[in-house]
Length: 511
Image (spheres, rainbow, N blue to C red):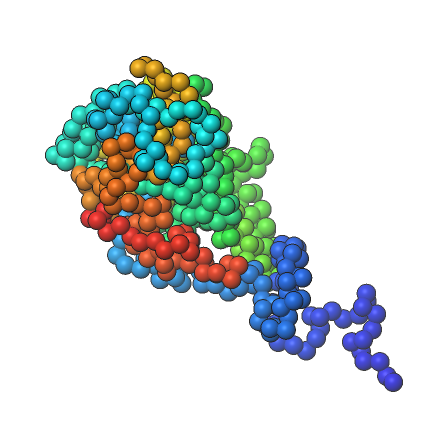
């Protein structure tokens, strides 16, 4: 029998691309042969074999599904007219103690060194750092509180600058979370999930709303320097990752020393014309690769290379503060002149907002005060209080606060009982997920209100709880997004920032 021309030596004969099949099927096959997709599929082979009888549709890979999902401009966002166009998230990593700052509990002074009642503590899981304590003695705040503004909000003496702007703030005393340790708690607040691999808030906004400028990234991250005395609770790039979204939506961090972005300057002997020609050549190769293989990450690389080229001009202009007037330094304070400080990063956040960066996240570590609260809190507040006030005030003076949402808070709160020894002059506080205080200001939220209540021990929420998922749903709402509609198909689910647990917008916080 004559051999069919396609049934020759497989090492030298025609490939599947030579078969008389539709071009669409060839493109799908080529995409599925990329190394990334091959490795991603390899772990599913046994499951596919078991499910093969259910039909060929089960064999479609997540990677292929992603390649046909709508692009941001096709999502028709925002879902409704937003109050805020951009957001600045001031993340106090480590967990600020709410009863020492913004959740005033005057009756605690009478309960000094008495054990917190078991009826209050209940069956709550404790961390390994305090679970073995023989006692749980109550530690009242070391600082006095006063009422400020027309709203009459109670603020600790530690925050004299925050006290000046309480009528601009929406203070939430009843935020709560499911996680009791740092990594899962900070992941939950940033990505809506305690496990790594999900897109963060900034990545969702970048994907859903796109960029408002051509020369800077949509999502930028600033890490503030750590005081040597502060607890070095680390933060990682997983917190500003794009997860299963395209890598072009991940946050771009600015460095505090050297070039703000690595490889920003051209090497010696390479001028702008040479750089442009080189980039054009690389992009052409990438376009050919995409046409051949269909890997969506190839397009991401093209857009990132182009952004990097534009950033060579835009970032030096962004970080050049030589034209800032003296009034700026009078407002932010002398620390703002030192790159990498929290004050410097707050000023940088204002400059980014002016240039229409969509989402800016400033991290300030050190709030993990397991001991020496009276020694550490004044240092942390001195580093952050004035600069935070300056940022909100600066935005307001420039007419930017109306369409900029500013968020302040950490991943959880602290315990009212002391971790370790207790004295009239000092104490420590452990992690506490049941209640913590956050605040928002600017576009979309009601100014001058205090929302939610905790019990007399600042231990349990007794009125108007705001779980983390509701908090994130509310942030998205301020930016014109229905959290249930901004989804991305991955692993068989319509993934979203607020996850599968029901979440709701806290309408009483909205303007």
